Every structure is written in structure tokens, then in C-alpha cells.
Image (cartoon, rainbow, N blue to C red; front, side, top):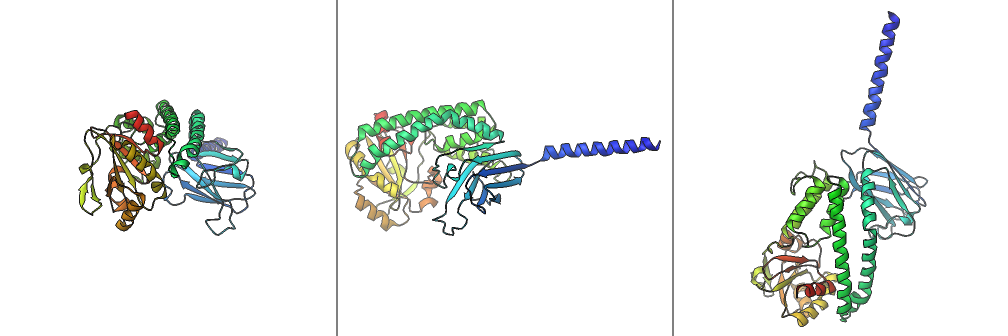
Length: 410
């Protein structure tokens, strides 16, 4: 009888131990192990939430013999950026050598292998040297990598065309030489590649619904499309990626931050989507008089609205081309420049220096004003095109891309 009781106790202990192992294996978190050849000892590796870099650092690790390690757990796959300070002895931020790597963090074992420090993208430029970087162990990263391979050739074509555009159109244009025919040719090719890339992205999202990888592809798709998707297309992309409707992720703290960011971005894009009515707003004219944008939008004509500021170098770089457009095509298109200068004195000075004789308006509240609130302009120069019926039909047009757009609408 005693042996029977003892055996029963042993069975209970064995059963309890087995259940504990199962529970531990089900609830285990992540282990991220990195191996980067050439990294100095004591180099710091910071883990950030990619979609919200202003949030507190998730974790910090330090390099030893080219290796680093993170341990923790996540409730859902999280897209993260590892920011690596490869020069720990350098105190000046300007002189530091920093690199980054981005991947989906999820529970399980994840390995990051880089053949050298320089194989990692430089931060913040994204430039990288020769070598390989491989992330293994994340199912969503594997899925996202398959998407990147599907558009790799298109991206390479785009990079090459952009280099050609800089050399053959943009740089000469800064000197007042407009190689318009060549610029339009290159811009048109870039537009076609963008359409192919967009279709590839939408097909991927449709084929891999409700996955974090699709949510990330959808996020990039929204960012990269300026007044090009219709409201229905935006809804479809978001619903396929998230399995929900736009605006459903309302709690920034409790929901997946990537889906929350995608929901917010989708709602912004719907407000300025292809085919919606342009948004009116309060502005001021050269004389300081309070006016409305609608006072200067010409019905029955295409209207090009350019957002800029006197302190913005790239904005000033676009003005010679706008002068060229105004003098060559002023009868076909109405140009309205809307400055985001908070200093009216600097605004007037820039207008005089640049010879901006077309309609000039200002939102002197800068990025805290109606331009940002209504058109979600967070970087300049930026532009929108309004068609003769008052609908938004294009956005983000600069240089020869504007010339190419004018050819399409003539």
C-alpha cells in the first residue's frame, strides 16, 4: 500500500512538472541574439518601437566580442529598430558612427547576423556598404522579406532613375536650365514603376490578410501615395491588413502600435484622397488681409497649390521651376503658393528675392496652423493639384514630375 501511495505521489510530481514545462514553453518570451563582426566592445544597442521612436527605449544591450543579446516578451509581433552606437568612446553626436537594423520582434529565438559593421545601414541616412545582414527566427520577418524580394527589382530601377533624374534634370534646373523633355521622360518612367510597386503591395496585402507584415506594407503604401488612392481603396487596404475598419484602433496605449499608426494614417489619407473635394481654410494675403483659399481657387481650371517656407532650402530650390511653369503655362494652370512662415518679414523678403509674382498666401501659424491640420502637411515642399471640378487629383508634385502631370492632364 505504501509503495502504491509513493508511486501515486511520483506520478503527481511528474505530471505537475510536465505541465509546468508546457506552460513555460507556451509562455516563453523572445531571445534576440546578434553577431556583428567588427563591433567594438561596449558598443550600445538600443531597441526602439519603430512606429513611435519618441516612445521610451524598450531595452538596451552592450556588445561583447561582437555579440549582444536581448530577452523579454511581447503580446503581439512588434516592428522594432535596433540603433547601434558603434563608437562608444566618441562623445560628439555629430562624429558618432551609428547603424540600425529593423525587424519584427516576436516571442521565440531570433538571430541577427551581419558580416561586418558596415553591412548594417548607417543611421539616419540608410546608406550601407558591402556585406550581408540576415535576420532569422521571426515568421513575420520572413513574410516581409518575401515581399521585399518581390519589389527589389522595381526599387533598383527606381533608384537608378532617380540618380539619372538628379544628374540630368534637377541639378541643371537649380541653375535655371530646364531639360524638360528628358525630365518628363524620366518622371513618367518613375510613375509607371510606382504604379507597379503599388499593385504588388496591394496584392501582397490581399494574399496575406491580417498579418503584421501586411500592416507594415500597408503603412509604407499609405506614406508613399499622395492623393493617388481613392477613399474606397484606402478602406480596402486597411481592412485587408487589419481585419477592421479605418478608425477602429482608437486607444494608442492598448492596441498594436503599428495598427494604431496605420489607422491614423489611413484616416488622414482619406481626408485628402483622390477625388475628394479640396479643403478650404483661413489664410492671409501679402497685405495681411484675412482670406480663404477658395477666394483664389479658379473654377473650371486646374489649380496647383504649393506649400513652402522661406527657411526651407528644398522649397527655395523648387521656385525657379515654378517661375518657369508660371511663365510658360500660366494660362493653363493657376498656381497658388501657401507659405508656412511664422515670420512675415522673412516671407516678404523671400518673395521679393525669388520674384514670386503669382498668388502668394501665408499660414503664419506654421506647422501648428490649418495647413497641417487640414492637409496633414508635416514636411515641405509639398503640393496638391485641384481639378476643374474642385476635386483633389494629385499630390507631392515637384520638378519634372509636375511637368509630366501637366502633360497627362492637357
